[in-house]
Length: 97
Image (cartoon, rainbow, N blue to C red; front, side, top):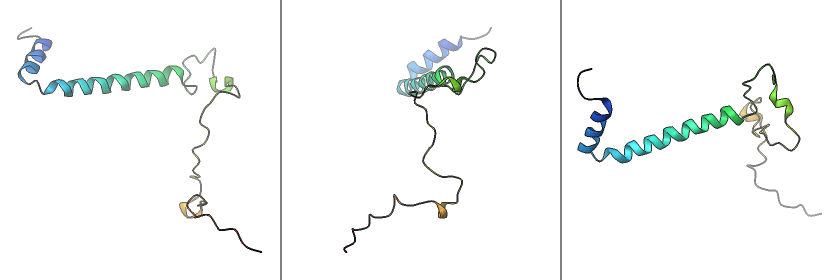
């Protein structure tokens, strides 16, 4: 193998350009947090089944107190013009008799 190792070249480059240290730090933290989030989703999400023989449908084991998102609250089946807009209308004043 000719030339210096990759780690030596990297450290020499960072020593010449110290402004790269924060950039490398933020990129490292971002990549690390993305990897940890993906691991969390893969290991603890009820939608992921790693063991098909013993637990083919893990979502059926959720109890009534387990929290999981069922709906987003937006009706995407109907066109936007037919959706109820009650949350955008101002409240109507009470009518006098």
